[in-house]
Amino acid sequence: MEIEGKIIKMLPLQTGEGKNGTWKKQEYIIETKGQFPKKVCVALWSEKVDQFQLAINEQVKLFIELESREFNNRWYTDVRVWKAEKLGASSDSYPPQPDILPPSASEAPGDGDLPF
Image 1 (spheres, helix red, strand yellow):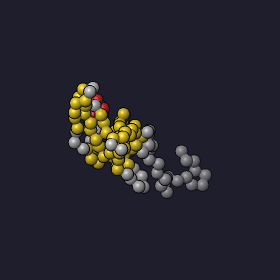
Image 2 (image 1 turned 60 degrees about the horizontal axis):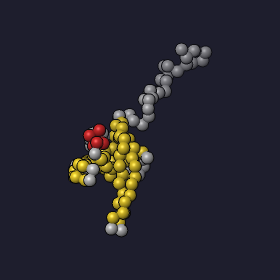
Image 3 (image 1 turned 180 degrees about the vertical axis):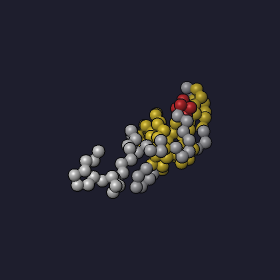
Image 4 (image 1 turned 90 degrees about the vertical axis):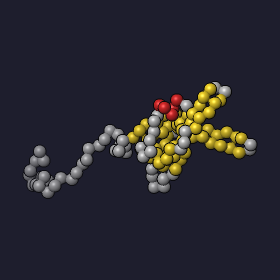
């Protein structure tokens, strides 16, 4: 799955020790685009934290996995980022499209005039 938006908040880095060694988790709040923007908490784990160094106010496209697990009869869902792409200011279309302006009155072809 993919999600696009702007990073609006970075939560504190979490670290710990598990059966497979040291782990770290960095969570971000991303605000999606569209008529009804949504805020989503996404997490980068272990080496992904260093690989994709994201910053507040960056426009990003995140490739995510959803995973839920049960604990004490409650379900918890993680939104894990496995790939991240930083988008530029003109990220709506790629490759960038040239600005197309209507011809001015002096450039408009008249009767019998060739347009070149």
